[in-house]
Each structure stands twice: as structure tokens, then as C-alpha cells.
Image (cartoon, rainbow, N blue to C red; front, top):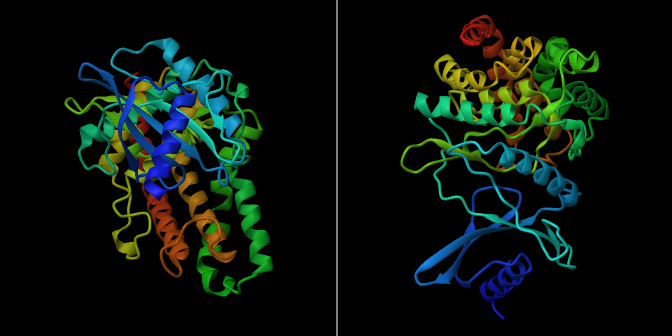
Length: 369
């Protein structure tokens, strides 16, 4: 049996477990995404009618407890669906005869099947109307779930955005210097030390009970928003594997870090790296426009801090991975993680310089509501 035939056979088996209707016409491998294996399936319903599904094999090396991930997704999507927002769609995961929204095939593989939402996505965008729409989509997600008790969710990646622990771990690995790389990153380590207090403010605010835990997406990239093909209206948020309790400012900040950088995440020429205030304003307008009435004053006044924090934190993670031998992040060349570190720290420096301007823009948007 050739490889392609065996894949098709497996997909038929999995689709049957989740009761896909009709006859398989074709399937495609979806190459976007670096973690799970994803397939698009087209089924004939007869009389020229077709139905499409998405099947995924969950990467259990990254996600050790897929049952907890699927429990979180089920609770969150059911809550969103119960709000019935006009023009919006929600991911629906099909269930087995046992009522589970995932399937263990007995060979160490966990599978799931969802509806396919016909749409378009953007990997990056300079069009301000799209930037605002992305902000509104993630703001809507936050707002719709503002009355959901985040403690009901599993923390699928413990201490994912605990910046204090991330930095403490970095310091431990600096002492070990297992790969003799510490000497060449003295400047980067000094940057962390100088900005440690700033980067840990949100963690300390949470510990003091000054800001609440909420349901957060934790991967607020532009391409995780699905848009209507004609109107470019946002219709759904996808990639919900990292949904868990967290801080609204981290979701806001990570989107800003990713979408408002004038350069790529691994740009070598640091002169090209900066925060685009125009894009920032557009995204903030969309996000805060949807959340101004559901978030607390402390949260709204900490949005810019969220962007700075998450950018420093990611730089710390890249630096830690470089010092410990590039074991976590996929690298394409020697010192790739060091290049990423320097890019994130350069962006964080620019954010710190522009903090006052960013906060002025946020305050102005909040005052509109």
C-alpha cells in the first residue's frame, strides 16, 4: 500500500468515527501551521451537493493532554455559540459514539474533526481596515467570554505567560551555560536585567489580585482570524488549542507584537525593526472598541504594558532556548534563536520609547466608550 493510499484510508476511517456524511470525493493536506497535521476533506451528499470537513491529528509531543485541550475548546465554543452573534460562525467539533470530541486510534494518535468554514485569511496586512477588524475579532472573543468563569478551564501549558518564572529559568540556565554560549549574549542578558522589573509588573498585579484571570486565546496572530471572502468581515477565530486562563493584556500585546512590527520576527537588520503606531492605533481601536465596557480600568490602563511585557518575554524565551541548545523552537540556521532574541528586544526598546504615545492612543480610544 503506497503512502498516499494509506493516508486516504486512515482519513476515511477517522471521518467515519465522527460520522461524516456522504462519500469522500477528495482530500488535501493543509500545509499552514507547524504543530498539528491537518487535512481538508470534501464529501458528496448527492445531487451535486458537497460538504467539507477538517480533520486533524493532534501533536501529542507538544500537547501532552489532548483531552484537556478538547475539554477547553468544547466549553468555550459552546459558550460562544450560545451568544448567537449575527454574521459570526463558530468552530464545531464532531463527536464519536462515546460522545467525545476526539478519538484515540490506539496507535498513539489523537484525532478530531471540525466543520470547514469557507473564508480567507491574511498572514500580514498593512491595510488599516483589516487591522482594525482583526482587533475587533479578538476583542469580540474576549468580550463574549467575559462572563465565562476561566477557572473552569484547564491550564494546558502551565505558567505559559508567567514572566517571572520565564526570567528565573533563564537565569538558572545562564549559570549552567551548558553550551558555552553565555559569553556572546552579555548585552542581551543585561537588557533583561535592566527591564526585569517592568516585565514582571503584570505577573505581580495578578498575584496581588489587581487584575483578573480571563479566558484568553494565547495565539492572537492575524492568520487566526477567518474573514468573509467578499466583505472581509471577520467571521470566526480559529486555532483554539492554547485557549486557557490568562490575561487580556497578553492577548492584546501578542497581537500588537506580531502585527505592528515593521519587520519580520527574525529580522537581522535591527534598524528595520520598530513599532508602527498607525497599525497599533487601528488594532487598538478594534480591540478596545469591543472590550472597553467589559474589562476593568486596571486592565485597560495596562494594555500597552501587555505589549511590552509579551515582547520581552518572547525574547527571553528565544534567548533561553539559544543558551540551552535550540531545543524548543524550530531553527532554520545557526544562531537563528539569537537573531530572534535581538529582534524582539529591539522591538521592545522601541515600544518603551513610544510607550507614552501608545498609552495616549489607548486612553483616547477608551474615552470614546
